[in-house]
Length: 299
Image (cartoon, rainbow, N blue to C red):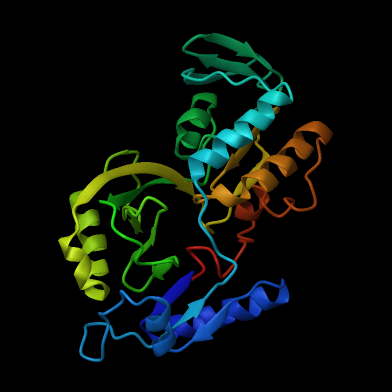
């Protein structure tokens, strides 16, 4: 992955990230503008007379792209082989609490499922479900969109991230450019896209890659995700006994195996796993936020 940098405060921030990653043995190196252009030959914009000239970049050689759906289905097949029941097309209408206030199960479109312990792990729908149990959480749901171009011959073999301009993209094995940008500015449960978000993202990309203006858009979509005040996840039991939440991952796709393991540990043992102990609700009561330079709010 190549981070294309346009201002010196951002470069200082990424240098701090580099030093942190060095501690954990991950590669992240500063490179010159010339090296950025060598790694991304299609990058012809961002010159000295542009709105935001490129001043350099950072390269993360360990980064890569995986097919999200293939990984999700592989994870599901492995769970199924271990005896986990999965009920597709079974929407949850509400959480059920007993007369003592404890969780007793969930009400679905196909009937009631009774359980003494329930984990809510539904991304952007977290608050809509927990509110049925009278529980409010420190979460905001936001819409994130992506766009895919028509396929073209191999042109870019790295992940390009331009956070100063607000877009990122990579080229898939089929030749499509998979493009993303910033989320909606306010809370939103919508699943389509806003036209101005699309225009801002594509307009920014064309500043650096003007040749892409000839491409046609193949498809576009939107989805919602939840975010906490410090952009780090919540993995904890709630104030409703027996009700657990894994939420606020801000995407979190790569962390799901570790998140699932540590969440299962807490449900099974009634104590938090050492790796997840800091991601509790208590940090919001004491304003003891988790400030990581890799998260959105700490940048």
